[in-house]
Amino acid sequence: MFYISTRGSAPTLRFDEAMMTGLARDGGLYVPETVPDLSRGEIAALAGLRYEEIAFRVMRPYIGGTFTDAEFMGLIEAAYAGFGHTARAPLVQLGPNHFLLELFHGPTLAFKDFAMQLIGQLFQAALAKSGKRITIVGATSGDTGSAAIEAFRGLSNVDVFILFPHGRVSDVQRRQMTTPSEDNVHALALDGDFDDCQARVKDMFNDFAFRDAVGLAGVNSINWARVLAQVVYYFSSAVSLGAPHRAVSFTVPTGNFGDIFAGYIARRMGLPIEKLVVATNQNDILHRALSSGGYITDGVKPSISPSMDIQVSSNFERALFDAYGRDGAAVAALMDELKSGGFRISPNALKTLRETFASGRCSEEETLAAIARLHATTGEVLCPHSAVGVKVAEEHLGATPMITLATAHPAKFPDAVERATGIRPDLPARMADLFQRSERVTRVPNDLAALETLIRERTGH
Ligand SMILES: *Cc1c(COP(=O)(O)O)cnc(C)c1O
Image (tube, rainbow, N blue to C red; front, side, top):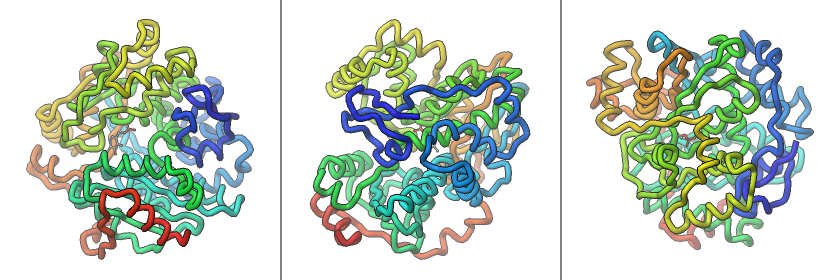
């Protein structure tokens, strides 16, 4: 199995190389050269298996020779051992034909743990084989950073530096980043906003001397290994509702298009998914693009579902690559147009995208109303991101069972939940002492040279 870039002019890589590289040298994203099929019989055989076993069977064809079967299974077991629910991704019913897939039972209470816990294990194992040491630097608006720190804390061949915007993440999110005591964890509070954090990380990747000296590696949502890990719960949930004998649909609260793109891969592998519904908050570029064909940027408006406050949805490039018949030059041209504000999707490509994807948007008021309504009618307490999904899903219910992805635990966003329901959700017992643990954080200026100096000092380069 090899991986190619969506822009058509970067080297073809193996799985472990694509995982360590992140962004391709031509600016594109890595995708598998061919998407492996699971037969109907193979999909049917997943029903009733443990999550880890399903994960192994779904992901194995993508790994190539990087790990033996026994090694890979061991890494999967280790990745999900710390989850607070034996089903890992349990399904609960919301209504006659509507189900909620709870993806928030991992150590940092958001779906990002599914991918991050696994790539923590994969990185560690790949580095042990090569004897290399790497430095992970990431920017976060909250959930990615906490999931990355949790996944890499204490690993011997990795230092992890996470830049978050000072004063702009929730208390739970900050404490999840600042309370781990391991020496290889470095939480950096930057004087700036999330875009500044992301821009400085990009600058570091473009400073090749620095990049090579510290062995820089990225774990943001464009990393192929993260997408792959998320394909698994589409299979586990669909087979528990009767796939492949019965089709299902999914609604996915989306920001960077990573989670929903994993659903698209599951569909390409043969899972009978009728529709994948993109659910956006008021930052609705994806809904506008799928409705009108115009992918036009429009500034980020901060919302109560902050993990989806995104203006350029990176992983959408992967869907465009397929919709344009895997024409890397065409994708590169679109991404050039995007630099000056946006582009129009060709009629053919738009038609192809609409065969798989539907979309909807949810305003701030509608988000709060959905949290209140679901609490009153079902007793479920939703986080604001999941509420966006539920509201949009309700507009797409039909004969096919609908599975909405619940992407975070309500206790991660207690203010919005309390506003909607009057109830302040409690943290799960296993992390109830989060507010008693001591914090360790370094305040940093929004300055590339200062950041590089700090990282060189801390890693001894
Ligand atoms: C990251 C995140 C999302 C958006 O996921 P994408 O893969 O960027 O579409 C939605 N909800 C929560 C809680 C998140 O942390």
